Image (cartoon, rainbow, N blue to C red):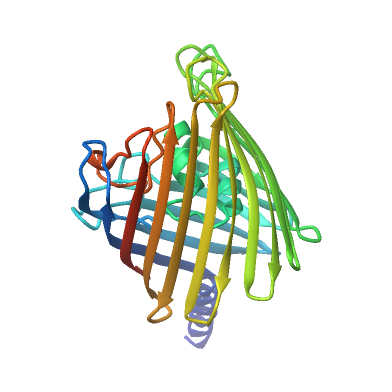
Length: 348
């Protein structure tokens, strides 16, 4: 009897030890705001409720199981939604349309399988001078030139190296899944990031082929450099969006950004940036955008923010200010448009 009790106790202890080595976390972001714009595509001003004007509203579940010797199995499921309507959105569709990955991490680095952000998109995000809000940033041009291509890559395998003196590399191969062709629908990306001390720098490349024709329809390139001076983090970046299968306007766009984030106090942060977009070979097509913002932390999880943006489009450009603004708030071409945004964000 004592022997059976002892064995049961040992097994229970091993079970509890295994449970202690695993974790599952529910997380999310709720971001809601109001937007005033002095001009819209209709020629009128307007006020709109805008979800995710700074960060996307998301929900997710992430987990980790320690399997010993420094190795772990990880998963991440993430979906997007609108706080204005409660509907799914800002994703690739489906309940977990932003991310659905399982992978393994260890001394070798990290490998993930499934729907996920490309190394190129992450490099654009991390290189943005304002921190990549969904208002007045590189993300505005990204959506207008590439849509969700490279943001939500399906059937993707991404390997990320461990950090070596601040240097980290990542490569992606997203399977096209078309019988008889290894190119149709395929995406590939690579990035290299240096982040050590006061210096930050990255560079990345992306390519995507049409799933029907096999033609390369999207090539992205980016580079950024940043430097921290006290509480100010300044950056400059460049992104090129190219569709080599097209000669239409805006099929080869360069976007240059410069700006900084200033943490004035533990609770208050200010940011500002300038973005200049030009159509290579068609100099009549240009876009200039200024954006400024302020965040104030009410607590560790809740932030109120305001943003102001000014954009002037020329030629074929129709650069918007807020990525998720209603379609009727599209910015008119050839005019200067100003937008003011006020919102609140909570993370859990």
